[in-house]
Length: 151
Ligand code: IDP
Ligand code: MG
Image 1 (cartoon, helix red, strand yellow):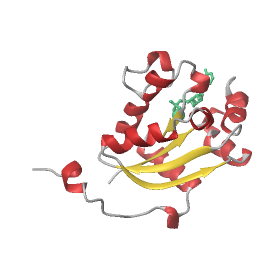
Image 2 (spheres, rainbow, N blue to C red):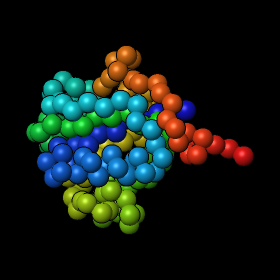
Image 3 (cartoon, rainbow, N blue to C red):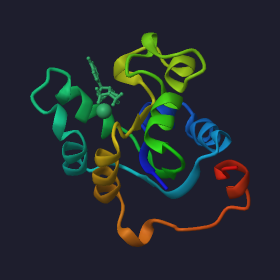
Protein backbone atom coordinates (compact mmCIF):
# COMPACT_ATOMS: atom_id res chain seq x y z
CA UNK A 1 0.00 0.00 0.00
CA UNK A 2 1.30 3.46 -0.91
CA UNK A 3 2.62 5.73 1.85
CA UNK A 4 3.14 9.48 2.02
CA UNK A 5 4.76 11.94 4.40
CA UNK A 6 2.72 14.78 5.93
CA UNK A 7 3.59 17.75 8.13
CA UNK A 8 1.27 20.05 9.99
CA UNK A 9 3.56 23.08 9.81
CA UNK A 10 4.12 25.60 12.62
CA UNK A 11 1.18 27.83 11.59
CA UNK A 12 -1.16 24.82 11.56
CA UNK A 13 0.01 23.75 15.02
CA UNK A 14 -0.17 27.28 16.45
CA UNK A 15 -3.67 27.80 15.05
CA UNK A 16 -4.95 24.57 16.59
CA UNK A 17 -5.48 22.87 13.23
CA UNK A 18 -3.51 19.67 13.94
CA UNK A 19 -6.66 17.76 14.83
CA UNK A 20 -8.52 19.15 11.82
CA UNK A 21 -5.79 17.95 9.44
CA UNK A 22 -5.66 14.50 11.07
CA UNK A 23 -9.45 14.28 11.07
CA UNK A 24 -9.71 15.04 7.35
CA UNK A 25 -7.08 12.42 6.47
CA UNK A 26 -8.79 9.86 8.73
CA UNK A 27 -12.20 10.59 7.24
CA UNK A 28 -10.80 10.33 3.72
CA UNK A 29 -9.94 6.73 4.63
CA UNK A 30 -6.18 7.02 5.01
CA UNK A 31 -4.47 4.99 7.71
CA UNK A 32 -2.01 6.54 10.18
CA UNK A 33 1.33 4.72 10.16
CA UNK A 34 3.53 7.03 12.24
CA UNK A 35 3.37 10.38 14.04
CA UNK A 36 5.63 12.58 16.12
CA UNK A 37 5.41 16.11 17.47
CA UNK A 38 8.74 17.91 17.40
CA UNK A 39 10.67 21.14 17.10
CA UNK A 40 12.49 20.84 13.77
CA UNK A 41 16.28 21.17 13.97
CA UNK A 42 17.72 23.46 11.30
CA UNK A 43 19.75 20.58 9.84
CA UNK A 44 16.56 18.54 9.29
CA UNK A 45 14.74 21.54 7.79
CA UNK A 46 17.62 22.05 5.35
CA UNK A 47 17.59 18.40 4.27
CA UNK A 48 13.78 18.34 3.94
CA UNK A 49 13.74 21.47 1.76
CA UNK A 50 17.08 20.88 -0.05
CA UNK A 51 15.29 21.04 -3.42
CA UNK A 52 14.40 24.70 -2.74
CA UNK A 53 17.92 25.81 -1.71
CA UNK A 54 18.92 28.92 -3.67
CA UNK A 55 15.35 30.13 -4.25
CA UNK A 56 14.44 33.57 -2.91
CA UNK A 57 11.90 32.15 -0.44
CA UNK A 58 14.30 29.49 0.95
CA UNK A 59 15.74 31.41 3.95
CA UNK A 60 12.24 32.44 5.03
CA UNK A 61 10.98 28.88 4.51
CA UNK A 62 13.68 27.50 6.85
CA UNK A 63 12.87 30.18 9.46
CA UNK A 64 9.14 29.34 9.16
CA UNK A 65 9.48 25.58 9.49
CA UNK A 66 11.82 25.88 12.50
CA UNK A 67 9.80 28.64 14.23
CA UNK A 68 7.46 26.41 16.26
CA UNK A 69 6.72 22.68 16.60
CA UNK A 70 5.32 20.55 13.78
CA UNK A 71 3.36 17.31 13.68
CA UNK A 72 5.14 14.87 11.35
CA UNK A 73 3.17 11.88 10.08
CA UNK A 74 3.10 8.99 7.65
CA UNK A 75 -0.24 8.05 6.09
CA UNK A 76 -1.06 5.01 3.99
CA UNK A 77 -3.72 4.23 1.43
CA UNK A 78 -4.58 3.67 -2.23
CA UNK A 79 -2.81 6.40 -4.23
CA UNK A 80 -1.88 8.04 -0.92
CA UNK A 81 0.52 10.58 -2.46
CA UNK A 82 -1.99 12.02 -4.94
CA UNK A 83 -4.95 11.71 -2.59
CA UNK A 84 -3.21 13.61 0.22
CA UNK A 85 -1.92 16.34 -2.13
CA UNK A 86 -5.53 16.76 -3.27
CA UNK A 87 -6.79 16.98 0.32
CA UNK A 88 -4.10 19.62 1.07
CA UNK A 89 -4.82 21.68 -2.05
CA UNK A 90 -2.50 23.70 -4.30
CA UNK A 91 0.63 25.30 -2.83
CA UNK A 92 -0.82 28.81 -3.24
CA UNK A 93 -3.98 28.90 -1.12
CA UNK A 94 -5.80 31.21 -3.52
CA UNK A 95 -5.38 28.52 -6.20
CA UNK A 96 -6.41 25.62 -3.91
CA UNK A 97 -9.67 23.85 -4.68
CA UNK A 98 -12.63 24.73 -2.45
CA UNK A 99 -12.91 22.12 0.28
CA UNK A 100 -9.16 21.53 0.43
CA UNK A 101 -7.28 22.38 3.64
CA UNK A 102 -5.25 25.19 2.06
CA UNK A 103 -8.40 26.69 0.56
CA UNK A 104 -10.40 26.42 3.75
CA UNK A 105 -7.77 27.59 6.25
CA UNK A 106 -5.08 29.65 4.48
CA UNK A 107 -4.49 32.78 2.41
CA UNK A 108 -0.68 33.08 2.07
CA UNK A 109 1.76 30.71 0.32
CA UNK A 110 4.17 31.41 3.19
CA UNK A 111 1.56 30.20 5.75
CA UNK A 112 -0.07 27.25 3.97
CA UNK A 113 -0.56 24.91 6.97
CA UNK A 114 0.73 21.60 5.63
CA UNK A 115 3.35 19.71 3.70
CA UNK A 116 2.70 16.53 1.73
CA UNK A 117 5.09 14.54 -0.47
CA UNK A 118 4.73 15.21 -4.20
CA UNK A 119 5.76 11.79 -5.58
CA UNK A 120 6.07 8.20 -4.40
CA UNK A 121 9.86 8.46 -4.70
CA UNK A 122 10.05 11.66 -2.64
CA UNK A 123 7.64 10.18 -0.10
CA UNK A 124 10.03 7.28 0.50
CA UNK A 125 12.94 9.69 0.95
CA UNK A 126 11.00 11.99 3.31
CA UNK A 127 9.69 9.08 5.41
CA UNK A 128 13.26 7.79 5.79
CA UNK A 129 14.49 11.29 6.67
CA UNK A 130 11.92 11.90 9.42
CA UNK A 131 11.30 8.41 10.83
CA UNK A 132 13.31 5.37 11.83
CA UNK A 133 12.08 2.09 10.36
CA UNK A 134 10.90 0.89 13.80
CA UNK A 135 8.68 3.97 14.23
CA UNK A 136 6.47 2.91 11.29
CA UNK A 137 3.54 0.88 12.58
CA UNK A 138 2.21 -1.95 10.41
CA UNK A 139 -1.33 -2.62 11.60
CA UNK A 140 -4.73 -3.87 10.52
CA UNK A 141 -7.59 -1.43 10.90
CA UNK A 142 -11.07 -2.91 11.25
CA UNK A 143 -12.29 -0.67 8.42
CA UNK A 144 -9.64 -1.88 5.92
CA UNK A 145 -11.96 -4.01 3.79
CA UNK A 146 -14.63 -1.26 3.80
CA UNK A 147 -12.16 1.33 2.51
CA UNK A 148 -9.60 -0.64 0.50
CA UNK A 149 -11.88 -3.48 -0.67
CA UNK A 150 -12.20 -4.25 -4.39
CA UNK A 151 -15.13 -6.18 -5.86
P1 IDP B 1 4.31 22.26 -1.68
O1 IDP B 1 4.42 22.47 -0.18
O2 IDP B 1 2.89 22.42 -2.16
O3 IDP B 1 4.95 20.99 -2.15
P2 IDP B 1 6.63 23.65 -2.82
O4 IDP B 1 6.65 24.33 -4.14
O5 IDP B 1 7.37 22.37 -2.68
O6 IDP B 1 5.10 23.48 -2.37
O7 IDP B 1 7.18 24.70 -1.76
C1 IDP B 1 7.47 24.28 -0.44
C2 IDP B 1 6.93 25.30 0.51
O8 IDP B 1 7.66 26.51 0.38
C3 IDP B 1 5.46 25.72 0.29
O9 IDP B 1 4.52 24.83 0.87
C4 IDP B 1 5.45 27.07 0.95
O10 IDP B 1 5.35 26.91 2.38
C5 IDP B 1 6.82 27.61 0.62
N1 IDP B 1 6.79 28.44 -0.59
C6 IDP B 1 6.72 28.02 -1.88
N2 IDP B 1 6.71 29.06 -2.73
C7 IDP B 1 6.79 30.18 -1.94
C8 IDP B 1 6.83 31.58 -2.24
O11 IDP B 1 6.79 32.02 -3.39
N3 IDP B 1 6.91 32.41 -1.15
C9 IDP B 1 6.96 31.96 0.13
N4 IDP B 1 6.94 30.66 0.44
C10 IDP B 1 6.85 29.77 -0.58
MG1 MG C 1 6.91 20.41 -2.24
